[in-house]
Length: 461
Length: 155
Ligand code: HEM
Image (cartoon, rainbow over all chains, first blue to last red; front, side, top):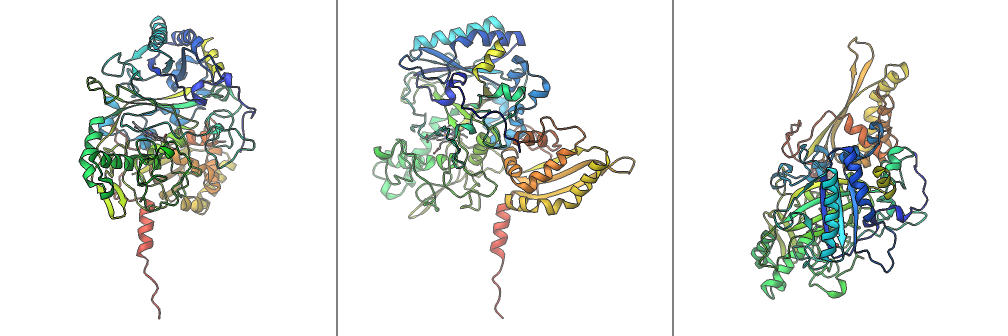
């Protein structure tokens, strides 16, 4: 089959920054828009384009304010000049979007997460999203400035903004007091990311190769798409998809769950009630809350392993160290032997998300909290949605003939046929939790393309 | 949860395409068995040729399968597998309306399958059109079946 587009090394100045690196600016806000018309969409993009941050090094001069831009398929239809023929070259999952039956087969936003209750992104006319602007800043004043630049540009050019949060500015923004890289359930996050290497020849066993994420340099005819020397391939080249998801976290349900189930932890973990809760939390995630993977530190968290990424699951075929359905074991089963229908190597995701809402320690805050999920991939179907489907139905590995309950942290427990039970093997027999609660509820989703900077310029005109 | 695919593709009427459809029909089971066996997610797959109203020749190819889990993430498997890729690419090649984009890579394949799929999987708020008598997966059924095979009696 054809191998398409030229394979020269991409120009970092043409790639949006967040694709290649996680921004460490302490303040960020993610603004969600629906365009009004083509002219307004183009001039909106034109007016915010001067603030775009590419993947080029900024040296010692870290920008005070900067942004990245995502466009949904609808947004591309409205803002771009691509003809209908070439619009159809985008992958079906991107075209149809997250509420389509195809995507919902993996996402499974049933019951509490039903798209009809989303704050943005369901398939009604009022709710469809065209554009997400990710703004970053070094100080709160700088964030206010970049947010007002973007929202003023929207007001002047027609895009309508969604305000999805029920308190504060109502925008999806990081809370200043939230500790870096900690998500609301108290876990350290952002530890393991694909290495985004570019080796020639490519290592077929490295699913972290940049060419699996960045459009235009396919290592095989599996994509990422659209491929080829055609207007769609050119439009998408140097871009990457972003499955943008607002995930409400029920911190109280999570804390209560740990408290209620801590007495079931084995004797060795009953040093204090708090320690027993830590043990349950680790068994749900596959890493202790300090980051230590259960595979390397099965009995206690350890500073030395808190950022460890070099380990596998092959030696743990009983789940005695790490339960099969623990979030990180499902999200990246590493060397686990998978079903023949599953891809090898295991696909990866670039995770660029951050929490919204105040840390649970701030007792005076009664607004909502959750994760601003930015899941970057070259293929929504075979990377993001595949992993999501594993989380909802953990039957992907050869080592377990039947489903192993659901992902401990994020699965949808209302999906038809959901197996809500959770099994924690121990030396003294299994601890079976009959029914995991909903810890995470979907509040909105938009599948975006983070186009190249030259594509954004061509849209702006 | 099982999901349905009902791929309905009207085909060209020229003699070569018509003969290719007949051949695809006759060889179907033989050609896809290895790929579908390997996948271990497909319950049943069958093909039918829909005749022209005149009774002469074939109007469309109909391919019906029921499989475990979502469809799109697993199309990569069927695209990579030479036997199933050939079967699907063969259908695409004789389609009356040439697929756009062409079925030359996984994206083209994903789009071709979705555009021509008449079935609807159930999704939140929207009922599907598949009846299921049981919820077991192929993997569960075949692993139970293996357990049920009794050891050979020594005579
Ligand atoms: C509110 C929702 C979520 C929470 C609280 C959460 C939390 C975490 C934590 C604490 C880790 C371990 C840190 C690390 O390995 O970097 C992690 C890893 C990971 N998560 Fe999530 N996550 C959430 C949603 C998701 C979703 C929706 C996906 C995608 C389908 C996902 C995919 C992953 C992956 C792929 C890893 C890396 C596993 C590895 O490489 O070992 N997460 N998550």
